[in-house]
Amino acid sequence: ILSRPKEHWFLLWIPLALIAGLSIAKRRGSLLRMPVQTPKQQAFEALRSGADVIEEDGLGPKVLRLQDGSFLKLFRA
Image 1 (cartoon, rainbow, N blue to C red):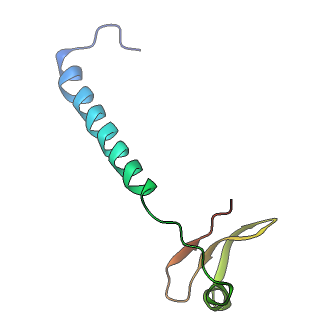
Image 2: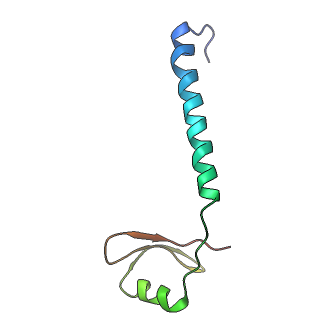
């Protein structure tokens, strides 16, 4: 793609790539430490009662818009 990269390519893009890589690695590590919460059926029904289904599949809803305007994303094993 670049037959003869100039020095500004090395001075700009390589540091940006390193910063992006470190940022991704840091976020990935912090996400792995977050506990998974399984809602109780009664609490889930209370959230779902006034929510709009944004996306669903054959197993049920995947993304809900709650009454307060926030979104709830459901993950299944």
